[in-house]
Image (cartoon, rainbow, N blue to C red; front, side, top):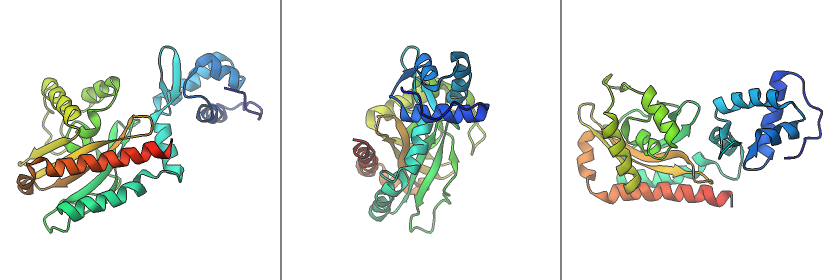
Length: 259
């Protein structure tokens, strides 16, 4: 890291923004001392500001005593960089899934700060019997195919925190699956590359697969949702394979855009 040319700001908010610029422009990993030297600030002041960035997901812990730009920072950057717009690139894939399978296709992005999935885009099924899925909606990760397709690939620390916090189903109000059952389900998702969900009590079902960013980190998922009655038509792996391939294609596009 090299010091920025501008003078060191004095206010806490200005210093926080100053540090964030250094993190964004700096190396993939850095230490507290390196960041303090680049900023021209005392290590104690940088440490306090750095913890605020860590809490918001803009900076993450790296190996040992190092830090690195956080997934939330990458997510925000991906929304601003014209070279790769996740939603724009996913749209044709969603439309192809709907055209081929006649079920609602959904793209979700993962927010590390909220520890939840956010519905980024939707292409609705032509069937009159369908669920209202709205952009901007929040999905809790321990429930449903969309949430679990992300949860299965999160770092262990994030998974632990989510399991502790999310204990009651948003639809049913019932406790979530036991830890042993959920861990077995997540293991199966990692093995197969996709998540299935089926709940006839609420007439909802779905299949989803993870989407990875340029650095191999989970950034969201792509999937299809449907009434549980129609899920019986998709018990074979053909639709699951199509969803998994679409998600893999989107992941490849993200990787190529940063190569």
